[in-house]
Image (cartoon, rainbow, N blue to C red; front, top):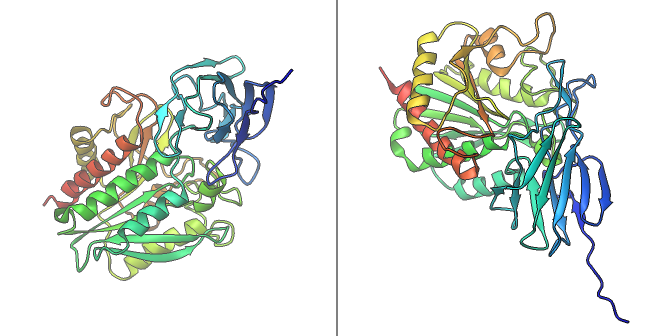
Length: 385
């Protein structure tokens, strides 16, 4: 008797940004997939905020995929993990267009996130949020590099030897200057989607360049993005916690970024606003510098609420002098910039969970829309008399 040969379901991560820890096959259609996570230089502060994998050979098979190994630690405090019922993953059948998985259950006891997938094809990709890789950024750069309003400067190398770049949008002398920083933490892909939206808007809208120069650090951790990391560079250092440390070997990324700001200031440049954009799972907020610039912060917050899809979960707040008193290497970028130069630095967190203005979970097109809104709002802010 002849029997058909059934294709085996396989799980793959050998591509840009792919990441999983252990893969346990419970049955032909049931897998337990561990989140690899990331630890700092001391083996602490495990972050389990990123997974990205491809499933092959799935045609006609309803699959159960358990996302496990979720507990971690943040600022030295243990937690049950950032992946919960509020953070369903996204799925794609072409690696480019993403939507959220609809059938899932969260079990807080283990904890685990169970996905039930009825595949529309034999191959699909799943990720915590829609990926934005080094390849994605390279495609954007290739598209805009011929624009006379765009310039790129290489400001250093990552631990892994990848280029760290600074983009400038706008030509000639400008009275005002805005710095935008994206992707200090590699899992926070919404930051990059918003960054692309901002860049496209700045190049399309000449009015935004008329009186403002825009300095943009588009991707702060290319090594982390390539390897599917979460929060730390290849040496285990948090790129948004060590702005009170100068170490070009252990943290060349921070050294390059700080150096770019310093050179600009030493040349007589001004910084009217500095913003670093981040993602979290369930909270959204704007944080201002440790001291000073209170009126600027208030107007910025109000513009964001009024004119963008920013949906804050708390009121405007201001950073303390450091995240962890008594410990070196614990200052965020805005804390470090204020300590060194008293700059008006801001940090924004955007949730990946339900957005009350959108009335749904955000996707890349929403982040790009926000990036354009952000550019316009910032221009209004710094252009005001």
